[in-house]
Image 1: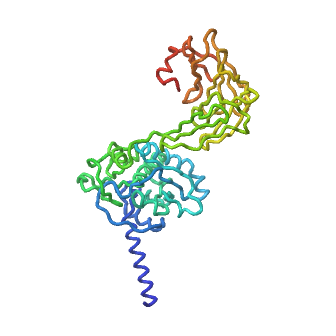
Image 2 (image 1 turned 90 degrees about the vertical axis):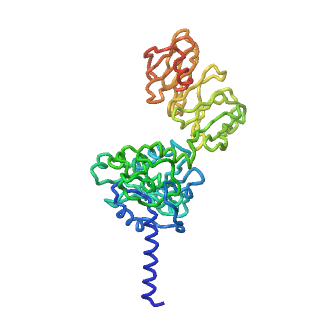
Image 3 (image 1 turned 90 degrees about the horizontal axis):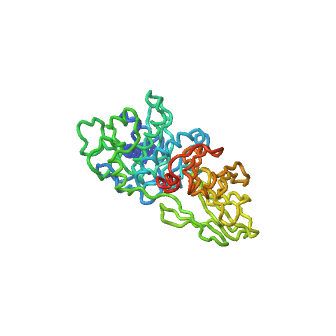
Length: 435
């Protein structure tokens, strides 16, 4: 074969691969219908990392590309400068996805960090930025197919149209919800073969093989959705979107972590159980050089980021141990003046940086890091030991205290008594005793 023939053959081969790549683009851009412009940028913007998919029947969800296990790994293909510059935009993206697809189904995404020096080995969804001024966000392929591309999704954080310049956060969130719908394996609604003639938007991107319910005008995946397409608001899911994501990923899982003092007597440790996966995690060891003989109380901060544990030392003094729940490791040990007879209980501030030690006499606010006393509130006469002490979960500006004899008292946090409101059991009945 001549050199000229080899060149022609290579060019035809590249053209053939480019054509196949264009057919797999699932992204919708800004909803203006400029699919040709969006598709033309894909081959130059992304690198393919796997074999080409087989053609599938037209539909809505691509059942063969549903992610088989959770969570779905996510990383950002951004350099250090881009990653630092887009902190707020990335936070909007993640919150929009978690408030929609994750909150309404068993789908989960994890990671959300930089992809690292070798993104090719990352086995999940890689996200880049769409920098072309007049092109929109897009996703290549549907579902697991997105993991074969680097990046498999490009999101737009910079806008030039009047609507998104003035509603930038909403536009970023709308694009994120739509594109992550593709990443979960869902095609455009107008691609369905039962799309009514009233929808003038042409099919775009990859098709699915399964239709869920009737054609949905209100779907976040529908170009003909008049509200979302014209204003990029709202970014919420329709009832049809929820039914579809639950069909393939199940209903929302109970999420959270249970902590319990598995051993009260030395060696003390905390058992950790993950509700989402129904699995036990490594215990938190509180033996700490064997200076403790028993544990008295375990509580969690209002925001869930800290555990506070009171431990009785071999010399009968009491220390306060702070555990970081992200790493399940001890991050601080503070000496306290708490008695070891159970006559004093503790409650945490919202962020775990302070704790309230309360008994029949007073409520004392301490620094959790040093144990230092910050402020003391005397209990009302003849009130008895408080049933519970809780910071306001919204702003922390109020302290709720319920006494067995007195009415519920609300203190400004924690200066002085402010008011008496309601019966002593009001909060306990309404919120199961926990604010």
